[in-house]
Image 1 (cartoon, rainbow, N blue to C red):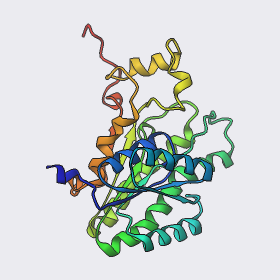
Image 2: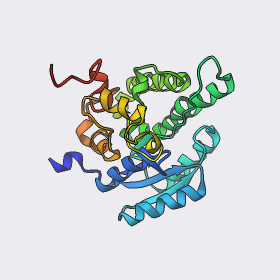
Image 3: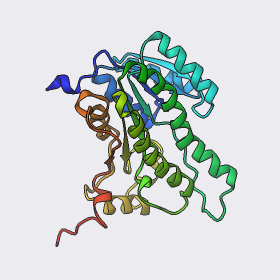
Length: 261
């Protein structure tokens, strides 16, 4: 049974894997046996991340490229493939701009869509061309609860993540015959460096998240480990075009159940 989830001998590329949830998922893949290729757009941040991976005893190399630049992505992927196959791709790089829709410029909207939707298409396409030749591959797009829900100030982000959900289904449809599985993970609200300022006791957003989540807590980055290993391993060979929401139950309910009910 452990062989079903083993990633020994596999090589995984994680975009935006220098910090946060991307790093947590990359660590999980590494602990399951995969060698890691970590993408970032800052050399300093990439170097710091590689030190962190190596401190954890993981095999990791860095690859600096802008996921939105098609030519850069193409040359980087071709170079990586000369060093060994990319068996697993995790499309994780993302940005968010919290601006009310009435005030958001078209250029800001386009930038968010470019990073969160167009870039995953570019990277997946370049990687898949090699996977198609080998008749094997795993692509995991990091979606969001905003692939399903709307919320104030995130119109561009939600639009992009909703599009990423549909891109996941369409790529799965096209590439399944090549034995490539394309799936997604939709994280809920997680305890990260970015959310630290609003996770203090008494903060309205902290109280809202805890009260809205049936599990009654924020997610820990390690809570994504099982989903990413599953979707990257043999265990998911007949799973395609799905989004696994790791959200503590938020999308399953209209509100956290009361103890009295």
